[in-house]
Image (cartoon, rainbow, N blue to C red; front, side, top):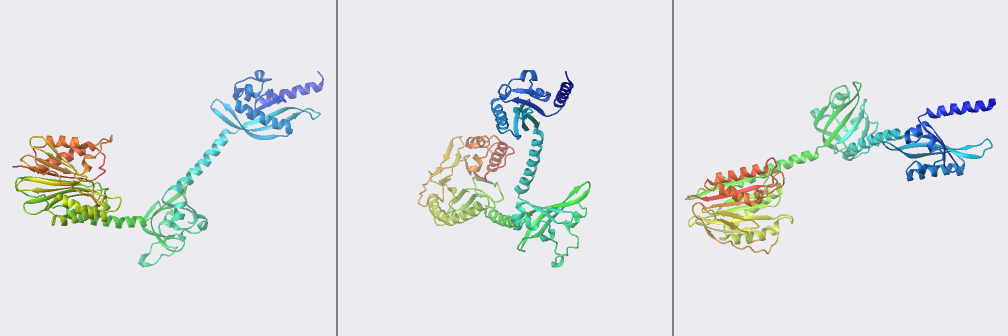
Length: 504
């Protein structure tokens, strides 16, 4: 072998050593895209030795879709005669990896193209890291712009660095307009003696920037773009690096809604006091009868209603009603219904006539999405007879001998159909030991954690078990059974019940 051949051999050996010790994938293919050369990294990653791959194409080694992509890039180099930089995906044991491939023409000394070479660098981890950084930045911005609180970032000098969307909306200004401006553009210092403090005097923001821990401030005001003041509650927290305060974050809430809510709560409390004052102060004390009542609202105000109304000679009106929904609106309508019904009982002698009149009035006054169910009975305490009318409401009479006598509804709900007509239920004569229960649907429709209903059957079961007890003991047993059935579940509706037992 001549000297030139020896040098070429040593160079080839050196080249193979370099190729086999690089972390990139190196390969060459002839003009029919058959492999001429692969390095050790190729063998390791794709589990094929170089002796086996020689003469094979990508279709013999890789999945069809990947092989087609590889060969298309090789074709571009072959036909253009120019270097191509592209991204490719290759299969690994832990899933597909992304590569940056540089593919280039290989030529003889006379310039004739004889092969396509390639060097592919795995950029999967780099891409993943970039995606993670981008994802974190996106999530951070998404969180900042999704929270309802206004967020304002300050640098160490108290200059505004950014506002999130909520802050921009509440202050009616863009982040770009305030960037680099002093925070006093928005934060109004306290007002001792009715005067604003100068910016040189200490207040929460400056205190935190000077090294204090987070400070929460109530009853503050921020300045909008047009100079008007926004009532807020805010917390200013330090941003620290290596123990040094390098900035602060203001997190603030528009206190307008809170102040409005306070007004509403005061109104609710007023309505509740009025409502409670209208409930009977005590149950009737009538010889031979034992009365008991129970009312448990599921919110501060109650849409349920019960009443005992003097109704002519020897008669007592008993009303139990339920306005749809719960809260302040139904509570207000309940008060109005009570007032109208009490007026009607002064001029009508029969329960069904009262309901006919009441329905016409409520149909005109109630909101379209609201209605009332009502059981109205007239109890003659002298001859112990009960007549009633019911609008979408039922009661149950448990006889002393154990017989069950349902008192069914005699008409539709009140307030939905102005021309609705309500009939009179069958009059019943009561005897010693009989028990009458009138309850709103919040009792039967109480639910257990697995969403089962307490139901009418359980109500009857409790009544039978405690029928020998007093009316108040019976109601107590009924409510205890219902609470036990619900377990920790809160009541989703108001619960009201009236029990009447004949004791002699």
